[in-house]
Length: 109
Image (cartoon, rainbow, N blue to C red; front, side, top):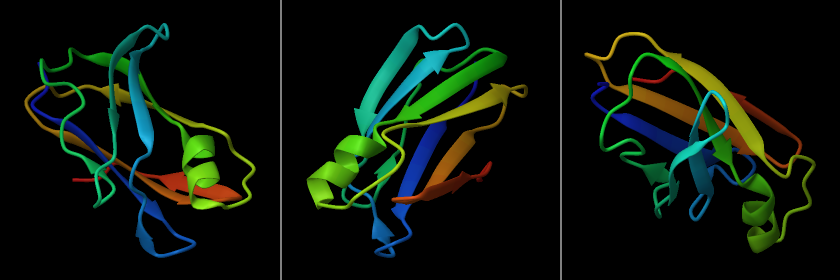
């Protein structure tokens, strides 16, 4: 089982953490595993407290609700990031850099 799966959302338009973003973790077939909301620092420290086995997963970020809450026009109502767990001895961090009309992600540390 993997050690930790965390995420961080930064609103690159404001340069501030994106608080209150709903994030759902799903297995490859789309079945949900867990759900959480980013804290005031834009983070969720643990999305898979029971660990993850090797395989593909999705993080689905409810960006539309976040932008509506902050009064920003936006193009992407949700962002889905698909990633693979290979090494269950390490932790995984999946950040999202977000703006109303673009986003990017990377494997963090």
